[in-house]
Image (cartoon, rainbow, N blue to C red; front, side, top):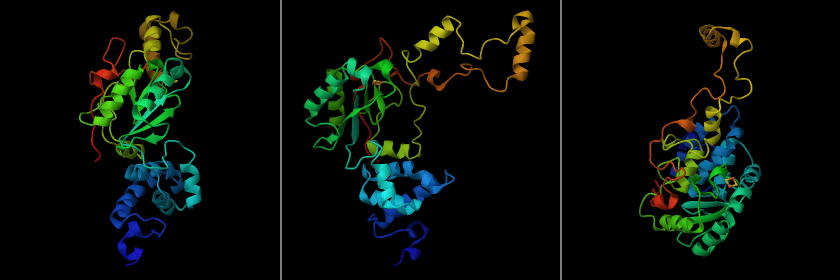
Length: 297
Ligand code: FES
């Protein structure tokens, strides 16, 4: 049977990709949806790499061939991109990537000690996976969560204010895999690496609004600004406003302002938490919540 007789999903298939027909057709349908989001098919490469990573837990030779076929690229072009970004794995990844931030602030606050203790506890080094396939340990650069340093991430979910002991407890919970593991903030539980990769490919799991968007430490500046009536440049009252009656100023503002002033809208960071895992000073620690997880779909 030729590719042409097997349906449009398989029409571009070559011998370079060894996915079975069901897998190829399923991924090709997903690829068509991804490519449809962009004006040029090659622009879809990054989410496509996450898509194939969601299938095999890494970007395999078959995954590279699949992306090349779907996007009209050479395998060399796809490989060049896949090997540039550390988020794309070139060998099978564990069910959970445990990323210990050892960038400047986290390092000062104990990130290196956390990594060393986890490395010894799990008997793996950087970018190595435990024998049971549960955990891949990584050093990672700044996770943009410096206000909660030292930070550990599991499949890009935050575990804030860690210590060597809480991090080892977290690793034990991931290894035992007998109950959901709850991040410090954000999603209500940690998903698998494959599930996370599919979300990064652009297929929502419906969990984006779980948990709080930010904790007290991240919002400290906003709180101080409000307490001291500080405003961002350009959002001050218009010149001469003090000479006008308040009602006139209000009317002018509502009729001339096309965009909301900076800080006027409630950001997602301020939305009410839906879980109790919004860890703020005095709140629960990750060791309280480290516990379970979901299984691969
Ligand atoms: S230095 Fe670790 S989160 Fe920024």
